[in-house]
Image 1 (tube, helix red, strand yellow):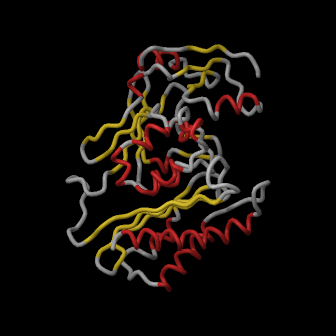
Image 2: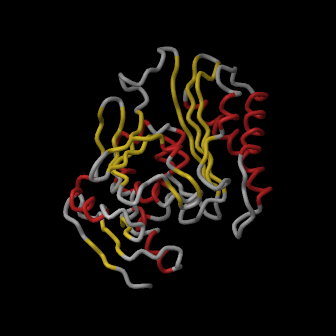
Length: 294
């Protein structure tokens, strides 16, 4: 591993001071489960790492104004234990199959987002829940849809002087989260890999669905490991909104989702296999989410 300096700020202000040079060779370090591996593999070459381990302002989960605000330095294990996760089933499922218990105790939700891996486990369900990301620097705070944060593999909209501070997640059923009395919401997630946990995704699918009687009032479909960045299947969503939940509509949405993605061949799977599996699991997750609303 190449040499680098390690800074260990005690609070958020000191961490932002360390990043204020706006130098891409100065990188934040959360759990380190991605960054240190990338340094060893020579995919990253920072001169300075700014550890966030002691920055308490970036930890914890609070409920405010109809949303969960999740500190970026909250570990996957802490997130998995939080009672509010029961209302976000797809996220609970993704956290449950995230790596292994040792990694979950160290890896952070902000680190998983910041790594911008197309196959990152937590990203499809966060996209399906319409999460927003809060970025902070010495001079400003920015809030943007998570879907706009990912630019390319391992590349994000974060400026070098910024930190991912929090993730804002809508709470289904909260007084400020408008759901018609006749409707209900549910979600589902599936990760296809060589193993269900402790393996990189071949394909991952997350679905959020709002039911209104026998119709789909609203739906969001997010995909991982099948494009240069985690993505929403926009066209597949659009053809389901306002439509009756039936086999014909499900098959068409699944087919379109498989056409929207752009998978590649790699060591884990061929592109055409990934495309076929997207069609299979989009349909299955839609069926699973629908069944939870009954």
